[in-house]
Length: 146
Ligand code: 4NP
Image (tube, rainbow, N blue to C red; front, side, top):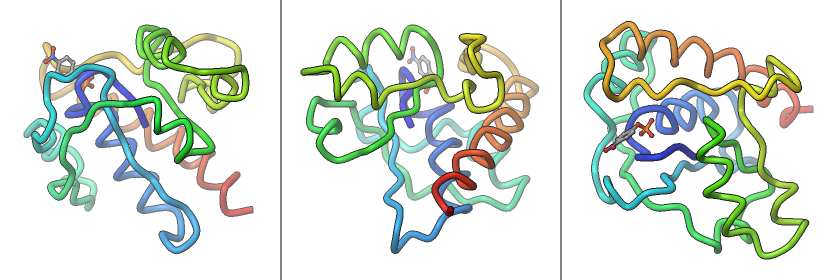
């Protein structure tokens, strides 16, 4: 799960998907394309909305996406088109590129829809992001659990 800072959107996506799959079978992680928040815990507003829905994401720490992630992961879900560009710029070949997709393609196929960056907004933005990611991770979990 990849966003820009790895403190708002992708930690929610990571926490949600982890809660829906068997950790013995599926490794879920998140990262940011930037180095802005390496080592930071998620934004307090993400922690709060997750907690409201019974999810604890306080053990997560920000890290930056690297080329090695193409080796480690089969699927790379990005939150917006800017993340998509930044991640695919690091792809070494077509196989790497094919691993990358917009997470909202899972619920709005072929629309190119982005999870809006809630960083500069209020609480409502985080609730909205949580609900979108809840729906998208339902679909991903179903696919992975089959
Ligand atoms: P995220 O949100 O990409 O969903 O984690 C942001 C967090 C921090 C910044 C931008 C977006 N920032 O500019 O520090």
